[in-house]
Image 1 (cartoon, rainbow, N blue to C red):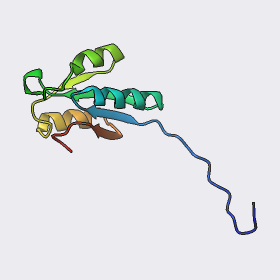
Image 2: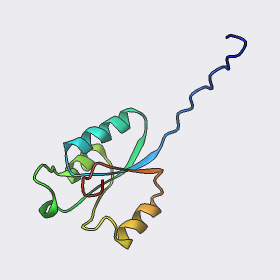
Image 3: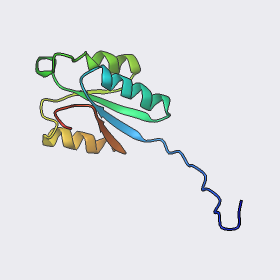
Length: 101
C-alpha cells in the first residue's frame, strides 16, 4: 500500500431474514437468488388467486416446495397483515408486487 492509501475494510456478510411479496415467476427468481446468496426467506406473501394478475403463478405451491411459510392477503396494508409481519421480525421486506411499487 502506498503512503496515503488506506487498507480496505473487510467485507462482513450478514444473513438477513426477508419477507418476499409477489405473484409471478420474477418473484420466484428473486427468492431463489436471495436463498443462493445466503439469506433466509422467512415468508412468501401473495394475494388470492381470483385477485391476481394474469401472469401470476401459484405462490403457495412454490412456498411448499421451498419449505417457506406462506401468507395470503387481500390488503397488504391491513392491520392484521402489518401485525403479522412485525411478529416474525424481518430485516427487510422485498417486493416484486407491482401494486406496491
